[in-house]
Image (cartoon, rainbow, N blue to C red; front, top):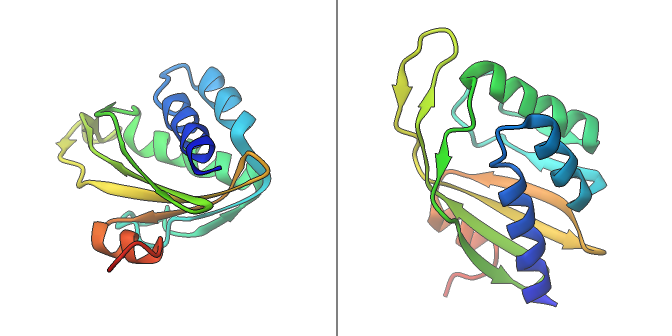
Length: 141
């Protein structure tokens, strides 16, 4: 089951790299549970730190993200770590530029701990600290 969950998360992460936002959302929605809960309370970005419930609210978060940055930037292939019914995706992202300022920022590494149920991502929690994410996944020794 875990390898199947890793593939579901990999599909979601690849979908979110598509600069064609309509196509990206269509592909992402295929693997998101209709009752998804997305927790971004650890993000150091005013206005984006919240808990989003359902596809409409999650979609709003991504629209707000793009309004702030104007781009998805570029990504390295994420490190995916299995954790029973969860998958931790640790991400390195580059080339983010503020929409209003045009200033490019160095995005710190971050991770999404995603719970999968019935072949859909039902919960996604953002972590800015890898140790915290690994502990939340139940993988710390």
